[in-house]
Each structure stands twice: as structure tokens, then as C-alpha cells.
Length: 113
Length: 115
Image 1 (tube, chains in turn blue, red):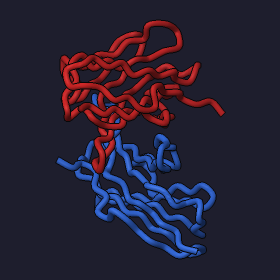
Image 2 (spheres, helix red, strand yellow; image 1 turned 45 degrees about the horizontal axis):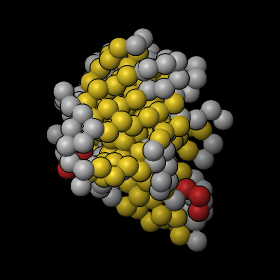
Image 3 (cartoon, helix red, strand yellow; image 1 turned 30 degrees about the horizontal axis):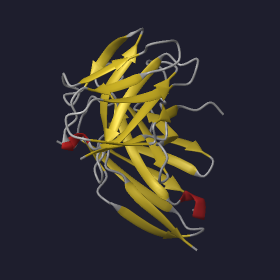
Image 4 (spheres, rainbow over the protein chains, first blue to last red; image 1 turned 90 degrees about the horizontal axis):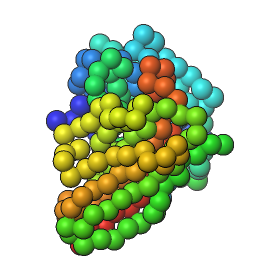
């Protein structure tokens, strides 16, 4: 039962262009969403988050959009840089619930020069 | 920048053996977690720990698993009798609080290979 789905296992984007990573969720109890970035041989690193009371959160080159009615969120990276090449995990949590973060399977972003 | 430290980075063990994975969370954090990622699959929640006791655990965290905070700095995950399907990357994480941003800081992981 995939409560958090990242349907694109990989994404290739040219340096300088916009990278858009998508995430869908099924559990309507989720009220907080996070994006983590993971390099090989390292643990996931927190990137950006958004509460369900917002529809957008921006931090430098990274913006997360949340569409609650569609149960969809996306991470925009602009402009994309070579160092952005990594696996990006979408994660969600119900802060009043009993479970930890639920992660998607990840999207491997490859930034091409 | 504060970090979560995990040891060993890689452990190979025989099926049925006990394994202990070690973690040193960020010193002023109060919440501690173990997650695992089987190769090619998603990162899965195992257990969270607060105030010297388990606060939440997933279905994966059965009687073969246990966690302990033996002193003020270490947080360990023990697998009593390892199975082949326990082979995975095990990530320790910590956070400052549960009600806030839920921003977990992860360690680099411990790769467990069960033969």
C-alpha cells in the first residue's frame, strides 16, 4: 500500500533549466510534507517542507507546491545545477498520528551539463 | 554542523546471528528514529524513541528488533536473530521535537548484509 507515490524513478534535466519532481499521496490525514535529498553513501538530508495549511513554500532555488484537493505536491528546482543530481524523496506525516514519516520510493534526478 | 553518526558503516553477518547497530544522535535532540531501506525500495519507518521508551513502531519492528539508549549519547538497534530479508541500509535519525517541523536529521546509514 503506497501512501506516498513518486511515479518517476528518474528524471534528466539540463543544467540551468527547471527540475520538477512530483509526488502523490493517498492518506488524507497527512498534514505535513517534506522533501529529502540523498547522495550515494549518505543518509537523506532535509531540503524543504510544507504544512497542509499552505500551498507554496519557497527557499532559494527550491519551491514546494501543495495541491490538497489533488493530493499532489511538487518540488521545483530552478535553475538546476550539477550538484542537484541526487535521489529526492518525498515524505509525509500526520502530526497527530502514530506513525513516523512515510516516504516515497524516490526520484533520481540527473542534471546534464 | 551537528550530525548523526552511525557505526558500523557496513556489517556482514550470518543468518541467525545477533547484530547491534550504533547511532550517536545530535546531542540536544530528544526524538530518535530508525528507518531502513531495502535495496531498490523506499525508506521505511521502523521505530521512534522518546523519553527512554518507544513512542511509535511499525509492523516491521517485530519481536526480533529492540532499541536501547544505554547512556546519554548512544541509541542502538538490535536484531536478535537476523534473517536474509533484514539485509538493508539502516538509517538512524534524530529531531529536536515532534510537534514542530518534524525535520529529521539522518545519519549516513549502516549497511547490513545477512548471508
